[in-house]
Image (cartoon, rainbow, N blue to C red; front, top):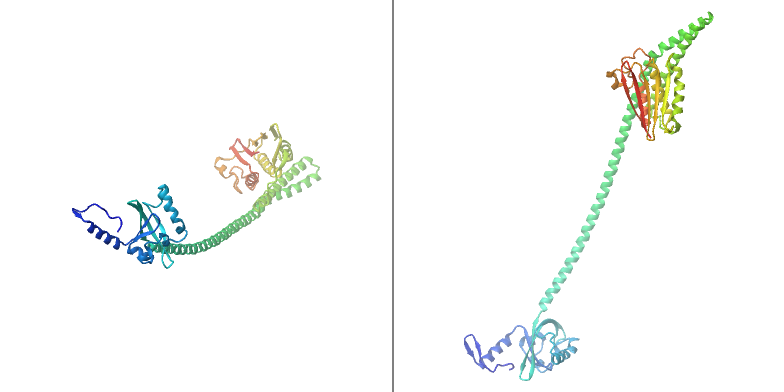
Length: 431
């Protein structure tokens, strides 16, 4: 037996004899679950316990005296002797006093994993190494099974993830399709709603046009009958005074005919302008022109409507005279305002023009009848006529047309009026 102590050992409170100690050592050594192998400094096996024999599949006689390298697979077998010599020469420990996982080679050539712990002790002048071998095959098998289960689980998770991704992608595609269908349906509903609105607006326009035509027929029968009768009567009188060579009476009735024709022309022009506006046939086509010359020419054209002794004056203030507007629409606006000023006033008419780099301001000022305060809110309504001008010919369309022309020109119109003192109309354009 090796490693015996040569002095008494105390076990509890009793002194154990050498023989008793040997028996106890043999009991522990022989019944240990882990394998124990004792080798000398030359790597030869000096002793093994039964567990070591069982683990490696050898009988005790087949192991004792043989090299421990027979229990090692390559390449550990070839390197083992060098490890012992290096330790003996340098004292550098690698696994002595520690432990590590290694592979053991059984008699049948198979290998198994075990945890190896190595200790050393000196016996006289010899160094002896004791290896404690704990079989970890079951642990390794369990680890392998866990790895296999993890791998299978990961594969299953990956498969389920792919399936879930496929479901999600199909749901997303279905959602996109549904969104597209909803969008298309909303677009169709919007288009249908817009078309319905257009139809309603078209129907309203048709109703307004129908109403306008009905009003025109009704009003024409009234407004045209008296002027036409006046023309017919004046023409007969002109003929009579021609025979009597009464020139003054001839001129009087000719002027009456001219005035009446101008009034009829104005009524017809208003109806034609309103019809074009209702049908959307009036467009804004701006161009560059001289605003001072434009106003002067317009006043010259309308001067023939002025009453006896009534003067039309133009005032212009501005370094520049060129503006970018639609001259045809602006002429209709200015012509209407000037003709109204002439119609409802006996005094002079002033057209004031102020041109700056950022705005154009045109004012038509008269000192005539003015507009009653209660009527001013309705001034731009269609067919509206102030309560103080019912005895003056007109159909109440002119200011409505002016308002709508100004909207097309993107300008603003306002007025200031006092009954019995006159009216000032202001046109404002941003340049």
